[in-house]
Length: 197
Image (cartoon, rainbow, N blue to C red; front, side, top):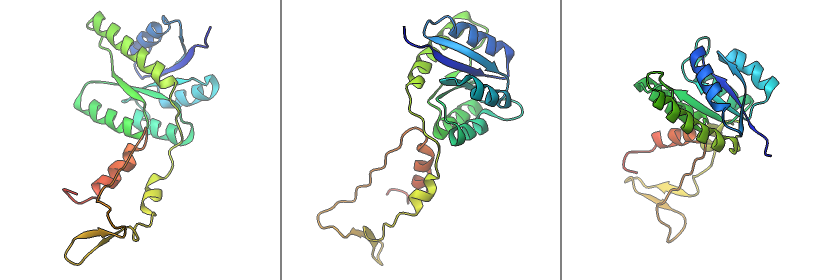
């Protein structure tokens, strides 16, 4: 039998921690190795329990999920699935989390409808399985790498504002790719580009 995916559930709500851990433990290939009410407890449990995947609440006391995620991706990367409320602030935070390096997100389950909880748990289960296969690397200083590249030999501007390249027959095509965690660097590059470029 395959090893179970070890999951640590981090959420300030005791109810949500209980719902998630109880439901996830029903899957044969997942073991919730622990829960944490905040990032400080989570840090210690990550070091001692060595989970494969983290579920992380966005809004928590003492330190929010985004700040903790950034520290995680810098010092101790671990595949993370964000658990966020469906408010506008929650959506914004989720997008930031994905840019920092979270693998995916699910909406925080509401206790009003049992079907809602069941759907969210099924979605979370699928995303945990995907996250467990992710290859997460430490965040490095991408800005420094991008801005220190010498492009003066490739593209030049004339005084009338037209650009040309040093290579005959070349066209103005710029291709930029980004993977998990690279979207923040991509955003920094795109913001500095002129409109309609």
